[in-house]
Image (cartoon, rainbow, N blue to C red; front, side, top):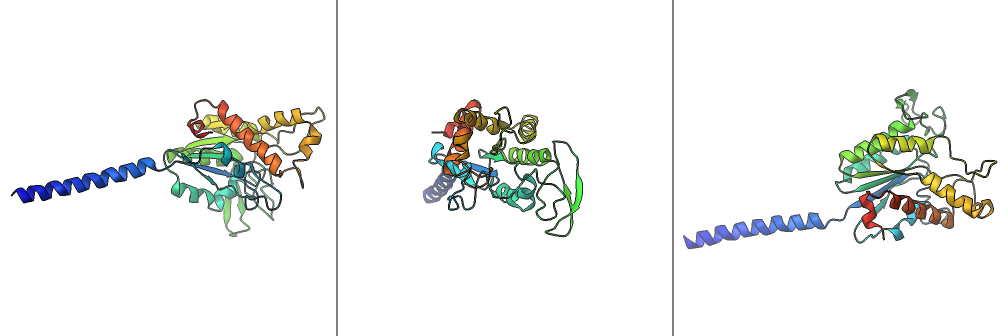
Amino acid sequence: MKLSKYIKGYKLAIVFIALTSFTIIKWQQKPTLYIIGDSTVQNSDGNGRNELWGWGSLLYPYIDTNKIAIRNHAKAGTSTRTFIYDGRWDKILETLQPGDYVIMQFGHNDHAGVDDTTKQKGTLLGTGDSTREIISIKTHQKEIVHTYGWYMKKFITEAKAKGATPIVCSLVPRYRWEKNGEVVKEAEYPEWAEAMAKENGAYYINLNRIIASHWKEMGQAQVKTFFPGDGTHTNLTGAQLNAACVIEGLKKVKDCSLNNYVR
């Protein structure tokens, strides 16, 4: 009788230890910061072998990776539409968990015409519910194309549904200047990004204007050295500035808990 009680107690202790160990493992699991975007966020293989860099590859020094993991899923050539259409977003959703973060920056490839028959990556302008039906050059099937805002809303709401925190960045500026010395804003993409963030409960960083303010202080001649090829893709120095501006903008969002992981 005493032996059976001992065995029963032993079994209960084993179950308790197992459950406690599982809880500790889950508790110790680091959250993940997912980064999504286009080539201005991650260019080529992310190692700058073609002299071009995206800011996502240079965010690591600012983040305490002992406490949070970083996964840069940005891909050159993608728009909001193709990031979803190519299955990249679904892949992230498979592993996205409560406590994770998703920081997103799109727009450079969204401006491409929807009717472009060679790349088909553009989205409709604005944030409304307008749609256009096309035939996909990849599948030769019908595809319903939505507005830039519609796709951004999808990223935000689906991230939140997983218990993650979405952070929207406006697109980084190209090397384009107005006659009055202001940096070209790239249509209304910053406003559309901000509207979707505010309407759907995401944080917003006006990265476009933060970078533009630093460019104005530096002057056009110095900023031009950031662009070894075209006026869109930066070298290491330019991408370092962009990454610093992401952190600058993040720190201004006082109630965003991602700041707890900033060095």
